[in-house]
Image (cartoon, rainbow, N blue to C red):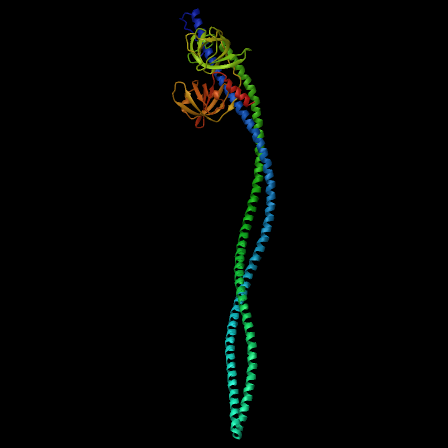
Length: 535
């Protein structure tokens, strides 16, 4: 539909009619210009965010390149170490094979020793038994020897009696005279036999005494030998048990060494696979490094193109903004067109005319080219009957208007924290400077004007004049150009943990939304913090 409408032939064209058409046309142009400003502002905000993201990507790419390089160096070093480990594992494998052979031989020797020691133990036990048998024979011999001595003593007794009998016979033969001579001869012979028997008995007794001494010594020696054999048998039994334990341990050691040998072979095989994997990883790392360099170069190219795009957008925004200002009071050109509730910021100036302290508030009422502003709970120190010079910023929709060098004074008859501003001239559409962003990752609570409910979100970033957060609440699909209050308990700037803003856009992402917001003016606390910590 065109801006001008063709009149019917029967209608009367008058200067008033032409003026109405011109005013309508101007109104349409202003509306279109405002929409263009809105669109250009969104485009510039998106471009700012894209630049921030591109810078972040570039930094991450550079860090990734550095890390990739370090990983490549470490991978190559790991490959060298793995090669060394492989060589050592081969050497260990050879040594373990030798140990397996030695353990096998030791196992055979241990089994042979056990068998031979068993034979020795059995022989020792036989010797002990034979020694006990000999001891029994010697004891029997001693008993028989005692009987023999007893019989010998009896012979001595008989011999003494025979000798006495012979003496008596000789005495009786002498009494008998001639008749007893033959009896005397017999008596002499008996006495001679008795003497010989006594002599032989003495010799036998002497031999028996010597034999008794020998038997006693032999008995003592056999007893000592039996004790030694018994003690030796006990010790050999202990040695047999120790050798059996050694044999069992040798067998277990042999089994364990075989298991170790199998494990080392598996480790050697795994190490070979690890070497192959490390070589593949090294190749992949080189490819990643190349792709990262390419991505970094492309990002740098995008950044260079962004600068040119920003300049063009800035020119369009300035031209359309000036057009809107020049169109007159039919649009939002003066303080007289402000609405109750419009968010504002009053920036006090120091003695050099530079921005100093900033106060946030909203429009209470408008009286011609004067407006009453409420900055509760803050208060501006202005003496009664005097005024100070300040700058004034006001956000209306997607546009920020800026008045400079205007007077602010206490508002008579209004609240304690209410002040009157005199903005006689039309404002300028503010071409906002590009503020650095502070990346965040913390919870936030959001309330929407006219809605008592509190919604949860996750902060993404914040700057002196804007911020973005992510949420899953569908209510934000229709929240564009609505005023919101965002509370960020974990923000490292205590004075900025509660922020008033206007929703500029709602972008669906995955299962949620990314909400882009514009602050009513530059937040000096956020600006100072970011400049200090992101210099």
